Length: 62
Length: 257
Picture 1 (tube, rainbow over the protein chains, first blue to last red):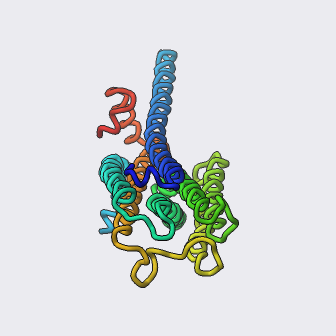
Picture 2: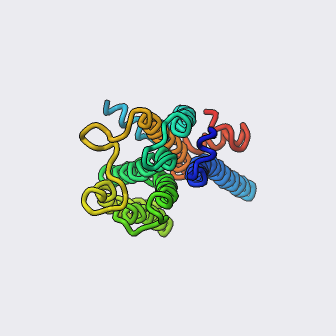
Picture 3: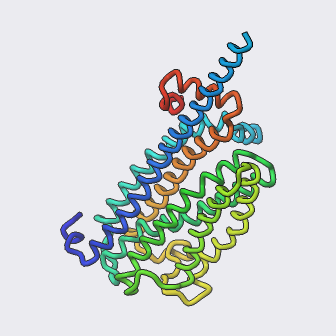
């Protein structure tokens, strides 16, 4: 921050306001990436489980 | 035009488009945010009454604007989903809620931090502050209601009705400073006359509002992507994508499409 801002009596309020906003922005990015990853992993596990079950059924029938 | 609209509403088409849209929106959004932060903190002159505390405007106003804009988007998407039974519209509405709630929280918190040095208090049961708090509860209620249903179609319908009913709160937030005596300052930008803010202070605010809007669109596109994949799990195209992802590595294959 520039010299005048650092010595400003409002610097703490500015830091808190910009800090909270940065957290919200970063949090949104992290949350959306994590969600996509989780959804894909869960769906892949379900697909694998399904294919294992169908393979077992085929083996049992044989 | 209608062909384009119908194609856009098709989940596999939208899924592919959303991945690209997310990057196209997020990269300029972050660049514009940095530019506006630099302009707002270092180039704009201090306010003659509020001093440097006024610089909170560059994060407070865009957050508050997004909180209302996202709610309207959510209600419109919910209405489209209800009327035209478009599944993608419900996915958009559901994806809006957590983003909207986070920016409403940011608007309330940055407003409280601005209120302390200007009004001498973090919180006052003022019409603008109270109606914004109600907006946060509406977002929580929307998400809670969705989570309460096992059946997705029922969750979509009930939450769309809540979103449409709650949209009445948005004009109340906007006009509260005009309709009632309020501690909160009146409109600065949305007046019919010239905005009551000087040009050096105005441009970082406008750039930040644009950056926040692009950021919302980018995050929304990415959220709708995962929502669509979850909803369309039983369809062949989604399973093909997941099988492709499995072959290429657990996570990266779909985002690389």
